[in-house]
Image (cartoon, rainbow over all chains, first blue to last red; front, side, top):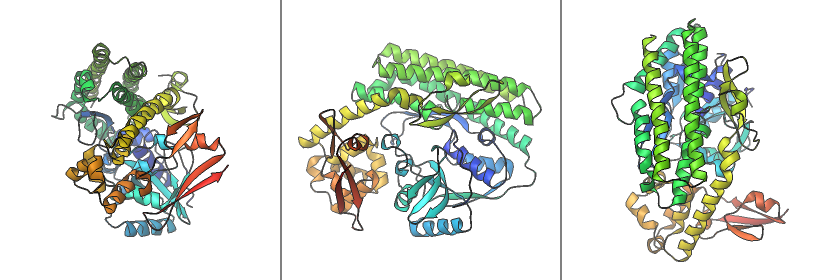
Length: 331
Length: 168
């Protein structure tokens, strides 16, 4: 087994990346990786993959890796496979060379988590750090300790089909520049975030996505076959914002931490103020989460309550519009 | 939010949250999961009643066992089709009892792979007795408190599974 420092992280992709970079010798925090990669985002959409509309508060899976590489010059080797045997052989070969390897997997097959916790989601990231017999040794940023995973489960996870299928994706850093242009990376990350939140011409992305969420939430009963299903999906709002690897408040708290670190790197205290404002926005998202879980628990899911939830969401949209408009002026 | 306001004491499921520390910096803290601590029972309740409802429909031949796993794993027909590689139209037919009876074993194997169960479990329901009541689904935690634990062991043959009742 490779001597790898296992650390839990708020989010699987940024956490996996951070742990791999730290192992390679680059001391960097998860919020910095997340912010440089323009990780924060918002979207609201209805896809054929879910019966209910879904919200997401981060950029597309895989983009954290790509954006970080682009903004810092760190080179990653990324490889996808169509042949599971070949994928397993190459993974084993890298482990024999003492190289920890990042993998994209379906979370459902990570059976070191309890069954009720596991859902089919093809965009979970882990680091494999060794193999003992038929078991791989896994560092999963959501798991408190190093875990063991049978090779059959890993294979199923790596080659699950469906939306955003992993296709055996593996990655690891191969080259870290001696001098990383951190200030430039931070600024580029912020600029892209501002663009994503304010300028993407789609009505369901960025701040417009938050507004759409606020508008549409009162129509959710139409998707439900009964009250129980509606309650479950209202609970899911809280889960998506608080429990699915967001660091709390739909990634707003981790982004506030990034802004605090940015103030030091950019030697500009104004970003400390932005950090504080983002923390307050996070608190308001947490109010959305708590309100959603409360009405779901009490099955108090009438039109009025959903409208009230919608107005809390709209308030957040206004605050984020104002925040990102101000952040844009600071460049 | 301050560390002490956000931190939840719940060891069973822990995660990393970011919070304001004593020195006003914002950093990571290890906390219990808010949802797991406060709403796991609600989750089990919703899922328990859904499972009972689906079981009754299977018994009455209104739906096929595929619906049970599809619903419990929150997969839409489109996603299930994409994951199994079986055309969506055909998956839709397999959701009815009548067409499930005509499904090929090869197709059932594909469904079982996605649900991560032995094919045999499409034809049986393992229940667990809790507080004198039989509940749908095998609950390992509840079973461990009792005299008997059941485990299923895969074999080289994907259609064959060994079920092991074991004394605790």
